[in-house]
Amino acid sequence: MNELKTTALLSILSALLIAISYWVVGDTPGFGLGFGLAGTANFAAWYYSDQIVLTTYRARPASAAQLQPLNAMLQRLCDRANLPMPALYIVSTSEANAFATGRSPDHAAIAVTQGLLDCLTDDEVEAVIAHELSHILHRDTLTQTVAATLAGTIAFLAEMIRYSFFQRVGSGIPGSRLLGMIVTILLAPLAATVLQFALSRTREFAADEAAAKLTQNPLALASALQRLEKRSKQGSFSCNPAFTPLLIVPVLSAKFLDSLFSTHPPTAARVERLQQIERANGGAPNWVFAKQRSPQGWIKTVFRKGIAIAISLLCMVLTWTGLTYNTFNNASVTVDAKWAQVENQLQRRADLIPQLKDLTPAQEREILAALTQSQETYEQAITPAEKMAALAAVDRAVEEFLAIASSRPTLQVNSQFVNLQYEIAGTENRIATERRRYIQAVQDYNQKVQSFPNFLLAKPLGFHPHALPQR
Image (tube, rainbow, N blue to C red; front, side, top):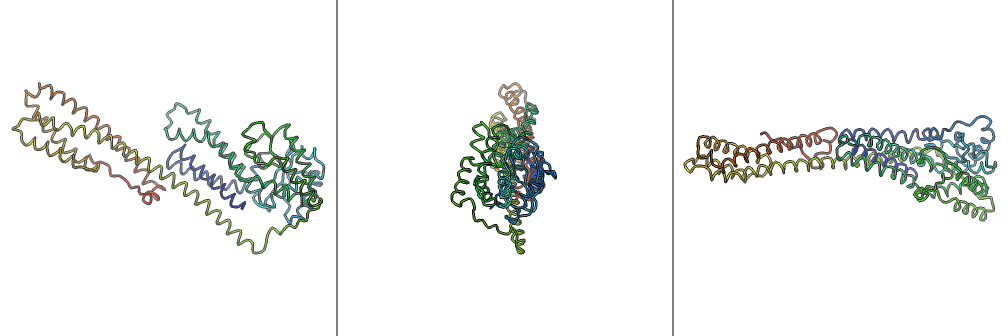
């Protein structure tokens, strides 16, 4: 189950990073940056997550003097749980807390603060270490650490974008990227909180129960939790709040939302459960720990990891497909909108033909025929290419009319003709302007459809390059 949670969290991070890069950077460069960030973050969250967390809390390996009493406790507990010995770290702070991290029981670490060692009895310290060892036993550490690392990455990214946003306000950021930056600034911290909350708080109850059975002293852990909660009200770690879920007790906050999205169950409820275990089992629970590995287990492990990688890759591909479809669709809509403006101006010009025919002398039958034919050709045109071709016929007919009109003094002083000349000239300018915009939109669309890796999805999604107008 925890492997599925880890896979889901990695997939969510990948999708978020790709989406954020797409919104902020834009199109193909954004996709490339997103995939690069996703791949790097996924590997770092899995392989280096323990070092990231230990570095964040400034944990250091326990000294020889500290190791002597702690090692005896840890060795005894590991023997009972059939687990390899994790590394021990000390956090030099007066705050009292502890956490476990690592991607597997073979690559795990337990860290306790100096404040915890100073304020708890030996039995209580052993109970706390047993609780953290239980997270390793249940393989919670990878899921917890990945969640914390990824939530911290998202929160850090949101902070960087927020800083960049306020530096660049008023500098002409494109609308889509501006919207993406605003959405990221507002929602990314919330996503980090949800990632923390996504992991069921029942894992703390399970770790408490396992610790009680490991030490055969449930009340020692209950007493430790009460002491730690009391101490947590006096201060907090100076670190990213995304790593709070790793702690044995949460850093208490007066903020309503922090308590609402707490990743830990209430300490009172945890203490009550431990007291129930004490009453039910007389302080000596019967607990048998299974071996962590079997000789044939590697096949199942490889299979599970293969499934996890496949699910993560599928999520990334689906995210890429969805965002690419939106890119193609937005570009296609832009092309259609630009063509609608061109078509509007072409129609304005075609509507001038009846006025030209009214001003054409009756004896100029060839010009009348050319004007009539050009109007009919345009009205029968359907596609943009056909309409642009019909425009050429209209141009020729209008040019012939103007050539005849220049030799007719009576037309030169005709107010209707003079106004018509101005209207023709204005329409010509508007057609040229809208045509340039349409060509630019088509070029942008074709670049998106034909560039790598977008062209791999263009045809399956039903998007094809547009032909540029020849005129």
